[in-house]
Image 1 (cartoon, helix red, strand yellow):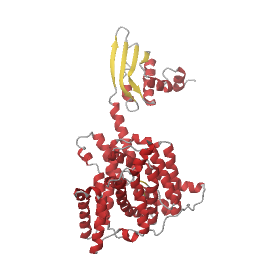
Image 2 (cartoon, rainbow, N blue to C red):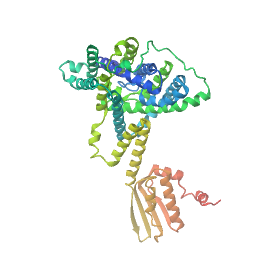
Image 3 (cartoon, rainbow, N blue to C red):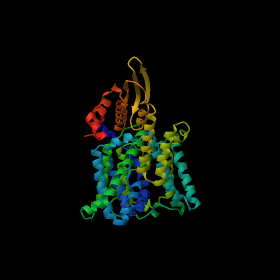
Image 4 (cartoon, rainbow, N blue to C red):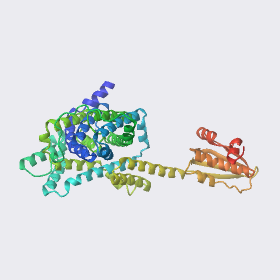
Length: 497
């Protein structure tokens, strides 16, 4: 069964995986060069990283069909390190990033994705779609009309070619776009910006490089903050991308295996002179949209990338950037969740706020981790506020025994604890008070403190107080942290000896 599964992952979609891998490899080249420039390193650092990470992750990644390489979000975190300490320290930080990610995989931190709500994922996806589109704008400003014409033609081919009988379904339209527009530019001699204008291509295969840095605590102090940030952002983007591709393909992924895989890939990248990377939502979407489904697509993309930049650089340099811009605009449009815009009218206000906040922060700060963190926190606060409203109290009075009964229903925790306390009438002339929590649940020490406060205050006023109906979980937390039935603890709190 395992053998069949592996065979399906690798060879269940050979034609689609090879063709989509070609498209991804072509699209990776300008991005890897651009990300190298952002980080302040030679273009070959990003290109070697993209080749290495894609090849390694094909074997050790947590899901098939997902593309990992050098990314803009990771490159942004490297700028200061490269500027202040140079490439060797970046390579050392890349190795440490890999180790931290492997550790995260063994600690099973992939479970943290369960705290990321669907709304946050949609906000994250929309932000990345906007950032992908914005990244194409420099290629569309202060240019001749030829660029606009080529980009428009490229988009026309991308969206119309699939309707061509027979071949429309066999060959990915982004690949057709890149090939046709390159031929047009070369044959007609149109003077437009090409991949060759992005930067120089490496002329040799990567070799093993151990970072030339002193193995001291001082070095660790320098690289650890960067490595920790790179590891966190890399895992977050990889987990989010995996979730998105899971939805697109209706399959599951192993987030903890993905964490280990990203770590192994980054260690390999650092040892071959490459920068740290992670999963790429844009390239992953291109892969899926072009028919890629298996691990073979990722492997083909990585291997072809190296072959093209080392052995076919003269040909690759002639690809017009307009063709790749058209492909990335298609990715942006298909990535954006247009249903979320329609949902603004029908979804709850809190849901819309979480989605828009996540999107806005990621777009304006380019910090994916910060945007997701704010989204998760807002979602948690709104959830806590919503749940707290389900807590209420049913009051009854037994005249024969002069007993006031408070029956609480719902969730009692930090956000509803004050309302719990406010339900009691401490001035009421009754002999006995029963606090019935059979339909309530105490979640935290704030709730236990509220119960202690009420019981102690009522007893100090001469009333007999009973707490009844505790479920097992509530009894456990009250027994552990509560003091209302522990005279010695009360004495400590009150200042006694």
